[in-house]
Every structure is written in C-alpha cells, then in structure tokens.
Length: 102
Image (tube, rainbow, N blue to C red):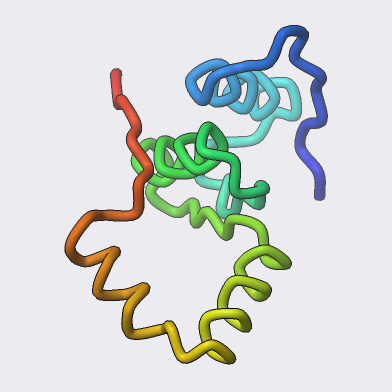
C-alpha cells in the first residue's frame, strides 16, 4: 500500500519527509507499529530518511531501491569487485551522513 505521494516544492530534506510520514500515518489512523517498510531510491537524503525511519520506528526496514541495489550487486559480482567494496565500506563507511534529532 502506498501511504503517501507528495510533491515538495523546492525539494525537501529527510526530516521534512519524516514529518510528512508521521502526518500521513495519523491521517490514515495507523499506529507507528504498522509502518514496517520503506522503499526509496538511493538519493542521499532518502538514505537519510531510511536511517531516520529505522531509528524512530523499530519495526521499519528501509529497503532502498531494489533495482539499483540489484544492478550494483551484479556489477560488483561480475567485475570481481565485491571484496573491495566491503573492505572500503568497513574502512570508510557508506558515505551516508545523517543528523538525528528528537
């Protein structure tokens, strides 16, 4: 079920999108425990939204973009670069920086 599809004029930040999700849950009369999955593309602000959602809603899992993840995995697998990718993530992190606030 799609909970929300809202155009944000002039773009938006992860915190603004999270506020929209909270408002949409209330509009539909859903408890936060019903928010179990989030699927977005892999833009950095949406990765941040995923991390915010997983931190604030314990049952929520951010799946990122399945197509993009499949494509990246296939490229890594067929180029033999899987070990280098995981070594780099372990050493440098995944490059996603989020600011959490209550």
